[in-house]
Amino acid sequence: MKTRGQQGAGGRGGDNRPGRPRRPSRDPARNAAYDVVRAVDERDAYANLLLPRLLRERGIKGRDAALATELAYGTLRGLGTYDAIIEMCSDRAPDPDVRDALRIGAHQLLRMRVPPHAAVGTTVDLVRLRIGQGAAKFVNAVLRKIGSRTLEEWVPIVAPDPADDPVGHLAVAYGHPRWIVSAFRDALGSGDELAGLLDADNARPLVTLVARPGRSSVEELEDAGAVPGRYSPYAAYLREGDPGQIEAVAETRAAVQDEASQLVALALTRVPVEGDGEELWLDMCAGPGGKAGLLDAIATYGDLAGLSEEARRRAAGGESDGAGSGSAGAVAGSGSGGGGAGPGSAGGGAAAEAFPGGARLVAADVQPHRARLVWETTRDASVVTADGTEPAWRPGVFDRVMLDAPCTGLGALRRRPEARWRRDPAGIAELGKLQRRLLETALDAVRPGGVVAYVTCSPHLAETRVVVGDVMARRKDVEQLDARDHLPGIEGLGDGPHAQFWPHRHGTDAMFLALLRKIR
Ligand SMILES: C[S@@+](CC[C@H](N)C(=O)[O-])C[C@H]1O[C@@H](n2cnc3c(N)ncnc32)[C@H](O)[C@@H]1O
Image (cartoon, rainbow, N blue to C red; front, side, top):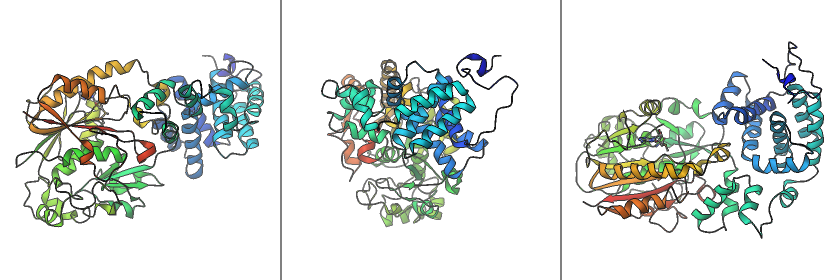
């Protein structure tokens, strides 16, 4: 097997001869970040899975862990911008391992407050250690050129003129593939907010937790250092620390869940459906179980934050048929205040539509390992491995159906730093066919008077409005509700009847919701 030194990429005068032990690293954060960026580039690794593992294995903590995270994730987000600048400053195309080091150096020079001599010096040291002396000289020269200008000065040099090509300009300036910038512009309806959206995509998202009602409470999460969320009565933001260390999270009574993801699930439970008695709900694409975890808790204990004091007391006193109404009593009140959700909270005050508990959730996923994750995170749901396009259930039996459809995930680019460079627009047509089929079977699964939530974590029109419009055009048994009516107090969701969340407006993922009622 060839060593790196023999391969040429790092062998330009390198000293990594076979058999010679590698010198110990003195910069664990930068080495970890480099390993992540390399692994993503070389073997399509997932940064958000690999980095935490490396930090754990290498005992990297505190400020070093924060630095490694910023270096790895920030570099991966900004690849498009950095590559354009690196190309401008290099007299030859760098080998991939050298290019990855240059990208990390460029990120420190252009987007972090690392002093230029430290950004260049530490990157050159890393290259000398990991690749070789020749590569280190090359990197030194290129980074010095990059550091001679600020990002604001580089953008007009490397990006197309905004007057001729506004989308191309923003793509380079904000490090997004052009097709994604176009898709966002189409979904926003104009280019006015585009820069703000792309900028929000480049920022590290807050860790948002959900206190699953009846199982945990926002107060419990506050005691663990979180602060109440802005919109969801069950949300709390964790500004620092490892969510996995919070007892309620470790016990799956609470979980990490984006606030919009909570709100679309909550909205489905708040649409009035006709008829009394025990309800049966379906989460058709449930894995890994974020929405199923919340739906399961609400189905069992009720939407405690939205219920009046009296209704909560009734649920706690066992008047509801809910499987968990007795246990709800143990925590009723704790989940009750809606966690002090701020003004505009979708759960603020008692909602006439708030679900009182006593339903049962069936949660399905086509992939067995993802169905298993759902089983691990829910308590009372029936979990099945099933293909939603070939239903394992009888038609017309469910009162509420959540279809959180497989999609491109363009609405969650903040969370998966490299994802934007991996997505392929060619896949959208295939996904669209699956989304339409799943929406058809979701509508078949719901009973007349019942409701389906069609949700995507993507604002791409071909996955959102176009899918809903096509399916609606084929069916006479469905009416579309105004989803915004079930998200009270939240501005900026669009002109309806769909609701579209946005990172730059709401601080959430760009989640899409359509609510469809079966009318006969
Ligand atoms: C967007 S994810 C769902 C996320 C989940 N609702 C949550 O909140 O954690 C889409 C899921 O659909 C599943 N899926 C894809 N095709 C499916 C099908 N034909 N039937 C059922 N599930 C499917 C995928 O395995 C994936 O877990």
